[in-house]
Length: 505
Image 1: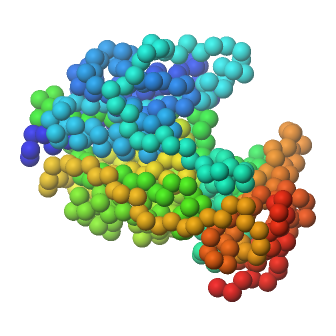
Image 2: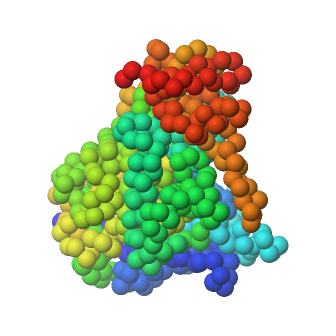
């Protein structure tokens, strides 16, 4: 093969669970994951110390301007080049792997380390104890040579005005839009996504690096209790990403020539075959269909085409899984069922149970794909990385089979799939979706109460508008009936009159 062929030769993951001694920081967890990747490659710290470049996922638990340099110092490495992903975005891991593989294929680097870590659990524990954790610092002027990805804000003015400000709100709104598209009742859809998440918890229970390795039944996931409180309908706590973790992941990529020179056994080699990135129409409410992703479909097509395979040829899959809707949208984009036990859509257990380490989940997924492929030589694996609200995407295809052509990363143009919006609209409309955010009641007698209803509605002209209604009459109407598809009248001041008759399809 071409000696410049990029190959993934070492993968490592680290987890420090609550109750274990110490308060590790992102640098500690990332360095430990890379040390494990070095051991996994069979070369110890040989490749780590010889790295030309370190590409790091920006952590959210402690902002580092150049995490790669700090990790390099902890490993005794002196990389000539450091790269960091944008401040926010789970698409970062695949973007960094694409950069690393492309740099190797272009002859700009021989050995590249890709890493990331979060220490939110230790950070929170330190605050509760009133101590300052001994985490690595960096110089005020520290900066990587390159920053990849976009840091554009995720919220439009109309969305912010309606109270859509975070993942729990956006994903819940998209979830109910998917239910409307599928034509399912609330009970039917809740059981559908509960079954999906129950299967993910079973995967996590067998994952030694999972943050919450415990299987849950469908009933445990869909039943709202004090410990499984309502967050934003239809989501309970056991359906949302878990950011409060201490986890790290590390990958070692190098040229085939460097891998051979270092003596990496061939049964450790996993090749990146295709890597593509794409951005969706940026704001959720500007999209033609808020429960679909043309960008994932386009990026997936490019990655699979580069690998010379179709999705039916891919045996091992990990779709980004912060919330159930993300998996469903990804599955729809690839034409995959979400309930095929012979080909589950996660290898980690997802961000609820496996752990949702800020921007870095995708690095864990790629590590899991590589480990799976080694146990099934000749098969293909696919993982997706995702940022913001199904907004920024990365798709990677991997195999132990050598690629037929030298790696080329692809940036796919944003698909033209937009919808007009109508901020401040008043008049008749049709309910497209809604979500009810809940106030977190006081423990131990917690009684969570709905705080408002956020409604996405379509005007007679097909434009999308948002309404936030906080009056008890509207909240009751939307929690005690199924309003999707119903007609409403929107009046000034966020007042909504819900009609019981459904608008004709």
